[in-house]
Image 1 (cartoon, helix red, strand yellow):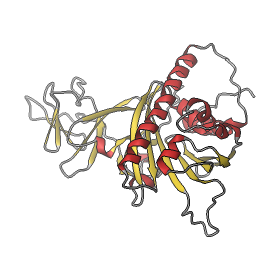
Image 2 (image 1 turned 120 degrees about the horizontal axis):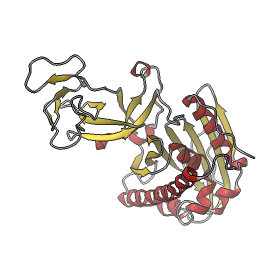
Image 3 (image 1 turned 135 degrees about the vertical axis):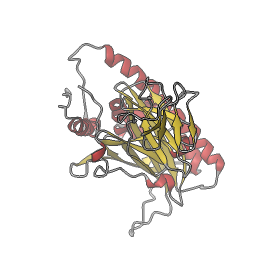
Image 4 (image 1 turned 180 degrees about the horizontal axis):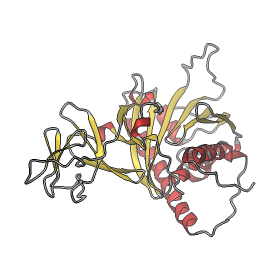
Length: 350
């Protein structure tokens, strides 16, 4: 049974990736062609010509105004995927049209709907407003993951691994030592996991970007909307510095770490990441540092999860998996994903 959740919006690309060049990306096993019309609107349609299945993203296919011309036999399609010209005849077959996909550009992401397009308008797209909001500066990227999307979800819902996998970058002993709280909002379809450290070492990731020296108060508040979007609301301040009674927090540094988790296939994933901050907005040095260091952290996760995928793919059925207190968020996410996929969640030994 498939682990991919259909009838959902997924991030297909950053808006900056799509222009007047033909751009293809596989989303949930479906090869999709993206391009912008002359007016700047993003289109999304099947990346296979209806004639002989030649990928329209491959040269010598090309755009001609607001049409795409297949480079193999010249079938030509409009921005809605409908064929508008067939070589050697004036009659266009009624079935000569590409599958088109609902698409929305929001919060610097291009979202595409996978599943029944009739459900697109009534299916919520989760928000990440900080990525395109005044008063915030963002660095971002995407790394291919040769592992199923659920492994990345497990990884992100249990940040205790930062202590061991990301030491020297983002991890300190306090992350693994501090208990978490987990809440599940079934109606909204959101899993919340919170870890708040009152007195922690400041990892290089934050020491070098904020300039804080000494111990810190560090909050990690996770908000995961299955199946597609994860946000880590991160608060960093000198130890003992808390928000004011009125909720304002001028003495802290705030970082929004966003992951869009998009299955490519059953066993590969597009790992979109972004780091938005509300400090040093115009400091290119800070931006360069955060971009380089966060990409390093992401690549450390990718290496570990690629190994884990290979292990899981070859292990015998019934292999025991132990879960403990730090896994409550990840287990809640698994249950929610299983419901969305219409499958029973895998049992976990405790």
